[in-house]
Each structure stands twice: as C-alpha cells, then as structure tokens.
Image (cartoon, rainbow, N blue to C red; front, top):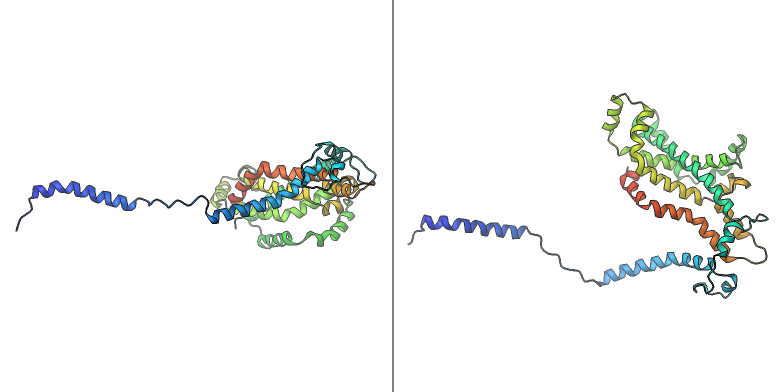
Length: 319
C-alpha cells in the first residue's frame, strides 16, 4: 500500500483546478445553433405568400398609373396591363386644371384647396381638444370622469351615419350648415372621442409622481399641461395627426352633406369628375385624378411612418 506525497498532491491541484474551470466554461458556453437551410420549404412558402399579397395590392395601382399616362387611342385597344407605347402626362394636367365637374371645368385643384382648408383646422382643433380631455381625465379626475370617458368611448363606436340628420338640424339652427366652419366643427366633434382615447391612454403611462411634483411646485392646470405634458406628447401627437389627416382627407359623406357647394372636398370633386361625361369617358384623366386625390394620405404615411410606429410603441394602445 503506497502513500501519496503531499508535495505531489499540491503540484497537481492547479492543474486540476484549471481542468475543472475549463469543463465548467464548456458547459456554460452556448451550443451553436444548427444552420437552417436557405431554401427551406417553410421559408419558400412564406415568401411566396408575401409576394402574392404584394402583387394583389399593387396590381390596381399599376393599372391606374399606366392608364393615366396613356392616350385614349391606346386605352381603346383594351390591354390594361400593357406598358404605354406613347407616354404622355397630358391626362395629369387635364385632371388638375381642366377636368369638368358638371359645367365647371377647373379641374380637381378646386377640391384640393378646399380639402386643405378643411383638414388643417379640423386636425388642429380635434387634437387640441382630445389632448386636453385626455390630460384632464388622466390626472385631474373631475367628478364623473369615469362616466364621461365611457360616453366618449361609446361615441367612438357609433356610426356617424345615424347622427347626420340631427347634426344637419343643429347646424341649420345656428346658421353653420353648408359652410366651412360647419364642416370643420363636424370633423372636430366626430374626431374628439378617438383623440381623447388616444391621449388618455398615453398620459396614463406617464408616472403620476411627475404630475404630483409639478403640483407641489405650484403648477396649475394649464401650466402643467403646456410646459410639462405637451412637450412629452410629441409621439402621440404625430399618431393623432396621421389618423386625423387621413380620415378627414378621405372623407366623402360628411363633406358632401355639410361642406356646401363652394367647399366640396377633393373626394367629392373626384366623384363629380368621374360621373361627368361629355360624350366619351376619359379613363386616363379619371385615373390621374384618382391618384392625385390619394397623394396626400400616401405622402403622410411614407414621411411619418416611423413616427407612427414610435407613437404606437410609446403607449398609443396602452390600457
């Protein structure tokens, strides 16, 4: 029976410790994931589905674009998908400044400027009222705030078609029917529930201690809102602006009913242009007018898309 020399045991200890450390590190090291094949059936199916969806949505836009730059002689041949052989921008010029709506042949530019005069004040007023409502319901909590918020939520989901006739009667009684202030007021009223919901949910995510600290420093209702809450509300303001601009610009029914003949928005003017015929239906002019009408909402989404995502992620759908 042999005995182990203490000197040899001490000499082997560092080596054993290093081996144990290496084994533990190897156990903790993440195992390399198996590489997925580049052309797996599932990936091919996903890409195929996305391509089909993209073509489904882009095909009408393609037809509109190529039809708007073709002369009528080429359109009569009947090949909708063919690339224009005789490229022309004359339909765009006619759609902007010479297309007829009944006996008036000033193009769709009249409706464009009417829509601008409707959209700008309606968007500003509805966002301002919704921001103040959301701020008051989130922090100040007046008596009956819960009932008021419930009524606003119900108003956000009631179809406005059922309220058109009462609103016509009310605006007629105050001499605002068929006027620019009347249609701006209508869009502000119908946009207020959704705007209040957005801002109330956004402000609900702000720490209450920040509001209490401002109150201790002597801040009042408007001072806290203007100097503290409003500068923090840029993401949700951008979201609200995108929603209101697109909704008001694309509106047809409210503009037709409440705007009056002198303030008809671009969507109503587009319908009048398409339904006005003087012997031959000008499909190229109609397509150009349709694209011109949709340019503003498309531009808003493309320019402000990243801000929209930021605003949503910052609490636009919280709560």
